[in-house]
Length: 365
Image (cartoon, rainbow, N blue to C red; front, side, top):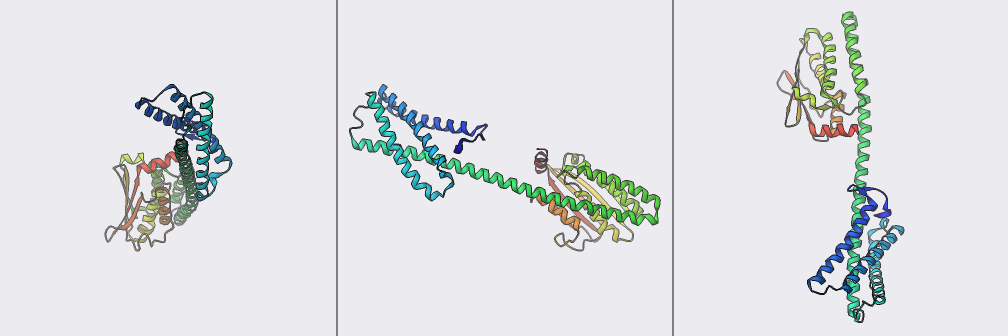
């Protein structure tokens, strides 16, 4: 269409698609008229030649019209200015078509008496004007629909790039935050138990190695995330000893899901930091997963009490997690933190598999 740039439409080039529509449209119009003549027993050799002329002149004139539209930049001007230009153009095209076709038919001696009646000539011009009007309507509608879709795609690309920048920003903030907290945990062990502090450093190095490997990904497999969580819990177990009890029950189907990196670790860290660490006798951290209807449900229970709502929470990790979930899944992912009882906090997370798979495909592409 405009400019005949080689862009793919329905698996073919834009130029090829234009010519298929151009030839197909005029051919359909000519065949429809021929069928009308046939049904009225008026189809003769002269009529067949006249229909061929109609087809030929229609192709030539409408294509020339298209060139005028493109070269005069009609497609870039206001619609109100296009309308009068189209009306004038179709009037001229219809008149030129009618008299040009008559000229050829006259030379071939097949014109008969159809051009001796001014009323008939005017009627033919009106009919052709309607044909060119519908040609213009289809052409401009197709262009504006294509332009709208192109703009929509560009907006989606722009939105995706903004989300990508924001996600990278959040990840770059999260890694130092996590390392800082882990180093504080190890520092607390150095004086109390040097041997265990060495083990803790080993656990931290394992975590850092894994986080560096996954740092470039929007999402990672659930198994990869659980390795980081396991190393983190091992690190905290060294620090809290018998004060920290851990229960982990993972649905085998969970391994087919993908989650944002350090998301589950952040939620577990939040459970220990705001729950277990504030209890003299320590407490329990329980991680369970289940898969139902292509949705991954993750629940984390920890001893303690939630003092403020999720919206009022001032913790960096939780705010970061909420932002990343929104950027990746909009409103399809759910994160809730509430008091399950007077002694237990419940964290619930839901991630749909379909959206996760779409993100994974886009990441690979």
